Image 1 (cartoon, rainbow, N blue to C red):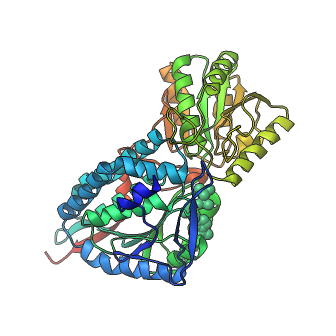
Image 2 (image 1 turned 90 degrees about the vertical axis):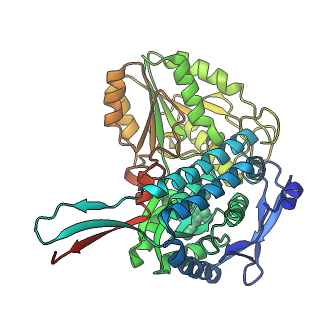
Image 3 (image 1 turned 30 degrees about the horizontal axis):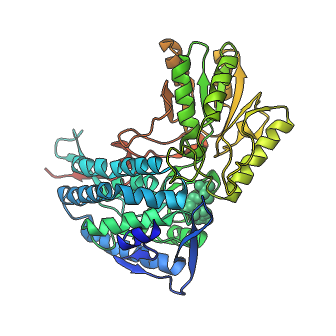
Length: 485
Ligand code: ADP
C-alpha cells in the first residue's frame, strides 16, 4: 500500500512551509508506525521551533494576499480542494488506515466526512455578512465588518487524522485566514497528503503550512508569536489547559475541543432496538477512540438485564482485526500506552466489584488489539465512569429515576456529548434541557456532521466547529462609526 501511495505523490515525508516541502533544519526525523503491525511506514521530518517560526512567517506573508481575494475566489479554491480530496478518497482512506488503524470503510467514511467541512466552508465563504445598526444620532451611520483574525495555529490529534484538520482549516481559509497546522506525530501522513492536494487545488503557497515533530517546541513557537492571532486545538484536556494558559501571553483567540465523558442514558421506555443500535454506534466507533464515544452507559433498572444481555451479545460478535481485512469492525488501539490505560481502568473496576460480561483483556491478535468489552455493575467511584477510557470498553451503570440519571450524567467536569434513548418525547426534551452538554443525541448515536455545531461546555472546551457558527471562530468584528453625515 505504501509503495502505491508513494507513486501517486500522496505519501509525503517532509513538512510544508511556504509552499515548499522541507526537511527539518538539523535533519532530524521521526518514525510513523502502522499500529496494526508495528511496522514503520516511513520517517518524517521532525520540526522544531525554528521551522515553526518560518512557517508562521510564511502564513503571515500569505495572509495579506489571501485575505484580500474575493470570497468567491477563496470559495473556488476550497471547492477544488474538496473535489481533489473526494477524487482521492480511496488512497487517503488507505493512508489513514495504515497510520491510524481504523477499518478501511470507516477511514474512507472519514475522508468524506472530513471533506464535507471544506465543501461547507466553500459554500459559506460567500455568506460572511456584516451588519448595519440604526444609529441613535442623526449624523452617524454604524456598521459591523467581519474580518479574518489572521494567522491561525491548528493543533490536532490522531483519532481523526483528516477531519480534525479540515473542520479547522476549512472555515479558517473561507474567512481569509492562513494556517500553520501541527498534526499529531502519530498520524502526520494523512495531513501531509491533504496539504499536497491543497497545493494542487491552487491554494497559494503559505496559506496552508504543516509542521510536525517536537510537539512542545512547535506549540511554544505558536504560542509565543504575536503574529499568530488564533489558536485552535483538539486533544486532551491537560494539553488544552496548558495551551490556553500559554495563549494568555499574547491574548490570542482560542478554541478548544477537549476530552468528554459522554453518558448514554437508556430509559425503561426506550425502543430496545434503537437504543442498542445507537449505544453500539456511539461506543465502538473508531474502537472507542473518539471524544464523543459513550463513556458511560446508564441503564434504568427495569430494562437493565434485557439491555445488558442483548448488548453483550452484539459486542461479542464484533470482528476485530487489521483495518485492511474484509469485514473488520474494530481495529487496533493507537499505541501501547492506550492499551495499558484501558487495562488499568478495567482492573480498577473489577477490583471494586464490577463484572466483565464480555471481553476484558488483550485480543489474541496481540499488538495493540483489545477485545470489545462490556463491564456491568460499574459505579461512580470507578475510573471507568470518572475518566475517558478511549477504548472499546462499555461500562454499564444502573439507575432508578430520571432525576438520578440526570445527576449521574452531569456529575463530571466534562460536557461534550450526551445521548438519551426514550420514546417519551416530554422526558426526552426535559432531560435534554437538563444535561450540561454541548451536544445531545436523542435516539441517535452518530451525531457529527459538518452542518451542525460541534463543541463542549464546562472543561470540554470553548467554541464550536462546523456549521455557520464555526466560522465565527476565525472572524473579528470591526465596528465602524461614520460621522459628520
Ligand atoms: P491525545 O491524547 O489525543 O494524543 P494530546 O493532547 O496529547 O491528546 O495530543 C493532541 C495534540 O496536541 C497532538 O498533536 C500533540 O502532539 C499535541 N501536543 C501535545 N503536547 C503539546 C504541547 N505541549 N504543546 C503543543 N502541542 C502539544
